[in-house]
Length: 405
Image (cartoon, rainbow, N blue to C red; front, side, top):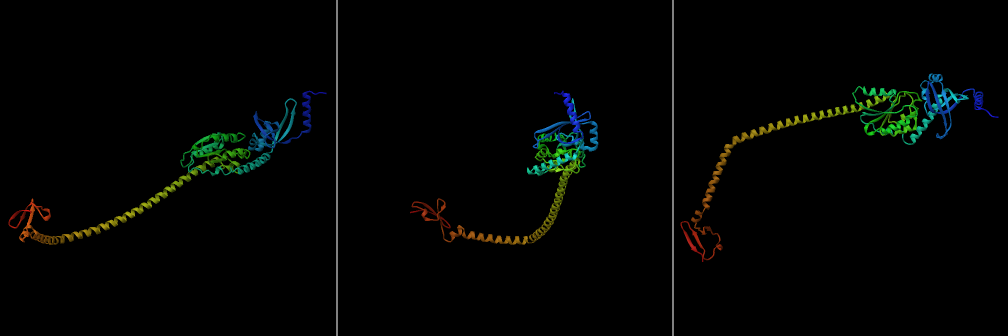
């Protein structure tokens, strides 16, 4: 007995309709998510325990009306759930059509399942980062004294990017900043790869810090920032990383590995402004201290100069009086001293004259002495003469010429 393909498929449809009449909760991973004409088409997979091999796959659809209902029910979490790579628990109705085959019609989501999976994954990521010593690595950077050159990791359409730039540009202190946007996805499966790529493009010599910002979102919106690869890459960045990814209560793994984490992009801008303000305040305080020290030193030097001036003036007056007294004494005593000195010198000259006269040649000749000369030179030693020399002997009244024998 044989069956046509249509008969076989019709039989399968009837079997499934009889045995799977109620909806079933199915655990799976969203491999691909597409939207078309208001409907959402899902490619579902289940991977092996090591997360490498696909052991099951299927297709599902959320019809436009049901999608609107889920969005009303789940709010922002509906779009966050419908992200590639997300592990979900979905309520499906199994339908089989003779021509189009098996189709799973999504009726509901259980966000708590996904959140539980994310929490488990988050704990595992934290443990791995701690084991590798990466939780504190980026925090070891010292922020520059002044932050001006900023590399921004964000989506061009991120809600918080404009707030961040406006807050910095419009600061009350007139601080100037330079920015460069390195565009990356802020949600979904592309976040990790794009952040890793742009981190390599950031030249540490051109920037002071890296800022990663996005607008607000639900826990599921921020799920990408709990991923190991993203957190590892940011912890090993070449510059200090400041994060403001728009959460008010929940903390992501990324918040724990970056240098500084703030709640919002506006808070990040405020942090940078006040960081620079602290430096300016320190400089102003230092300037005040230098000025105060200079004034104290100047006053000390002025006082020292005044004291020195007074001392010099007193010494000058004293010396001037002493010199005046000396001049008075000299002017009074000089004539008497001069007269006495002249008299003394005249007496000394008279004595010298008498001594010269007494010791002169005439007085010597008068006392019976004679002077012997040879060739006009006085002979004081007979050994200087030899036989035949002609000498002249001078007496008081005449001269005698002799020949030595």
